[in-house]
Image 1 (cartoon, rainbow, N blue to C red):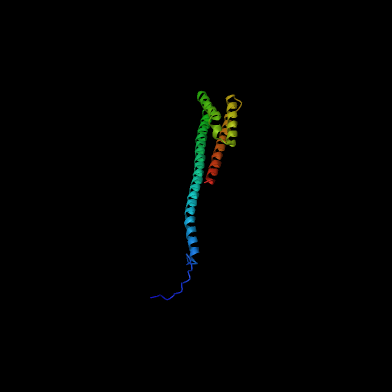
Image 2 (spheres, rainbow, N blue to C red):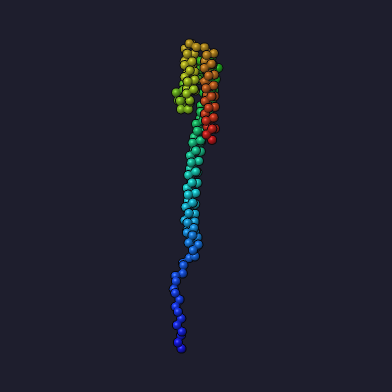
Length: 167
């Protein structure tokens, strides 16, 4: 038995994918590549923001500590000034307090005082010297002490306002 001659089918290449499928494959590949990249970028941005905020917090904490030290020093100088102007009758105590004032004047205060307080400290020190040499009177010394305290008060107010505005 012979088989009739069947014409051979033309061999045509089947398309590997449907025409719309190429875009879908490209989109899937793009999403698979872009998604991890976006995740990594998000992590880097998060770390950067954290570090930036941490630096700001460290700066604020440092400024707060300086403000607290300033408050302590100004409180000490205020108490010392009050003691000086109220103990002029007791020479030994007055001399001891004058010595302590000079220690603060030359030691701790230059580290934290602003220009206004520095000038008031200078004026009070000069008035104290004049008072000891009897070139001044108690009222002038008290006046310089009051000016010094007002300068300290203003300095604290200004530095706190600056600190608060940066928060």
